[in-house]
Amino acid sequence: MKRPKAGDIVTLEILSWIGYDGDATHYYGEIKGYCKGDFQSFELKKSLTDSEVEILNKEEGHISYSRGDMTKRFNTEEELREEAKQRWRDIFPDAKALAEGSFGIIAPKPILDGISQKIMKRLNVMVEKYKKIEEGDYKKQDAAYDKWAAILLEAI
Image (cartoon, rainbow, N blue to C red; front, side):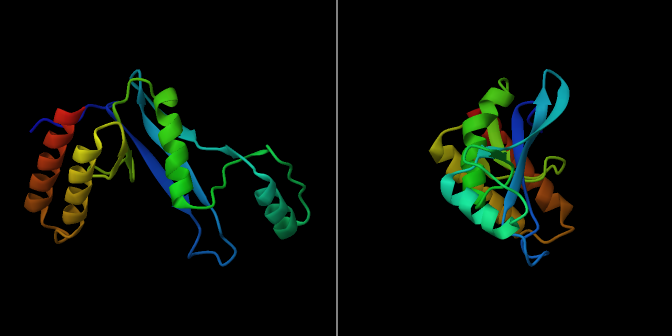
């Protein structure tokens, strides 16, 4: 079965300590992929807003933040996804689609950008079905991945 080539798809990996550290309130993200044959990883950053500066200065007291300071902290996963959608083409100009998940795992991943909404929705439904396949049922997992990859390849 034909599968996407290295460089066709870049991946947003979202990380957070929320749920592990009682003080954690932010999300962090990296876009990973191949560019001109080399693996690259780019940490996403954004400018702090006035309201974020006020909250951070109050929470951390010992550090003084200012409006416009760059941070890798994002308030929500959706905010991080939106930033990734705005930036991935500039970082990886040859890539054809942006997915979300773990870069090193070969499995269907939600597609965030780069293809038509109709096909993206279809692929993302397939991802949810893939998650329900019993762990260890490699035959079903491989078949589901191959079907997902075939549809993705037609779209890119």
